[in-house]
Length: 163
Image (cartoon, rainbow, N blue to C red; front, side, top):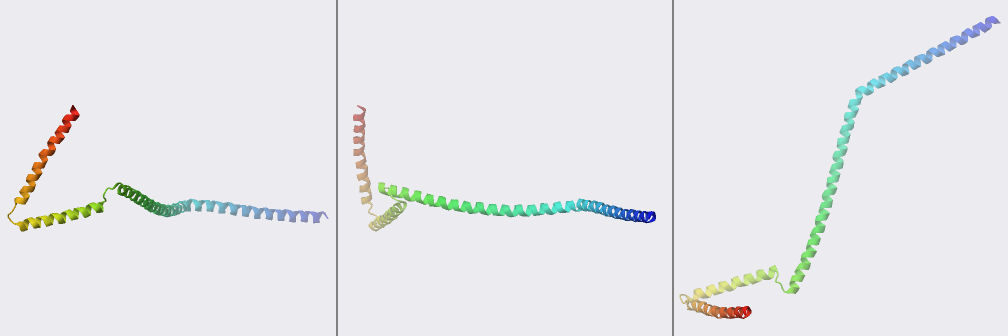
């Protein structure tokens, strides 16, 4: 019976030592796998970092383009709003000036055109009259005579105001 117990004990020790050896071998392999992973991470770390930088630059470029597009869109909307506001202001000013009787740019252009037409007609009539320039001279003399009469009235008014 002692023999059987010793054999059993030796078998148990043998099994335990075999189990221990297997555990030690597995632990050694895990340790070596960890060291290999660390070395690989060191080697590939720079490549991974560079790849992340490239991805970041691409995202930044896309984001910047979207932001610039939005700014352009908002600027266009703001310009449209300012244009509308400017038009409303111009319309109100034009109505106010019209109610005060101030002529518009169109009115002045029409009058200018009419004056040019009348001047051309007068020049044509003067050219038809030929060498007879007496109507011009008479008109000038009338204007000259009228001017001195107006001057004494203004002077006399000034005298009365001063007194």
